[in-house]
Length: 220
Image (cartoon, rainbow, N blue to C red; front, side):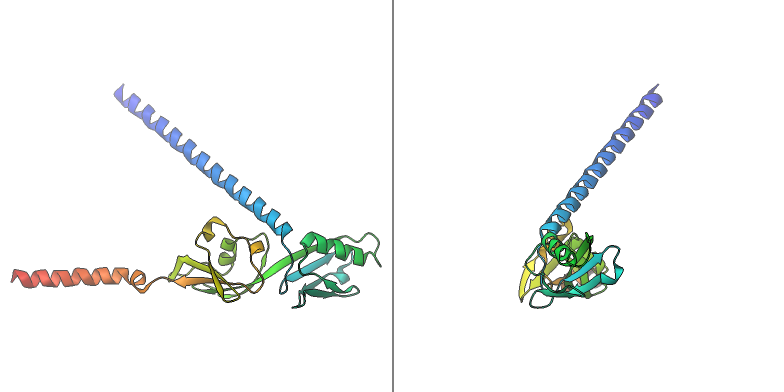
């Protein structure tokens, strides 16, 4: 009888533990979905900037599709359309402008555009480089594109350097900063762990050896 009671208690504990895990996983998935939805919304409200890459897709007219950079003046140049002012307007507004321009020689043009920010990722990451990132990406996604932080990197020393000014991003893992909030030309920098932090094990091991040596001498 006692064994049966113990087994039932274990089964009940396992059931409760499983339910807690399931609720925790559901909560995390819900938070991730909310974060992605928020990122997509903010990306739609973002404005095009000089240095951005703009991919223009003209459906049923592949010869007119193009991939261009926004020049320092804030313009893009497209075949058969010419120069179009792109900077400081939202993606939706730019798409409407292009649709109107293509409508001058196409019937009911179907157009989609994608805007990517030009971001440099440097410091203690595995693949430092220049990356073009989607506006709905998070800062965490940007660092992941660069291969993640190295063993020497410090996750608490992430900063965005813009126009020579360093903007700390200590909560980058919680996705508080979106690529839509970045500016083309930004540098995402991951700092190195301190010398003591990187050599803590060696220091501790040396301390143990020294202590052992001193104790040996004192016992003689």
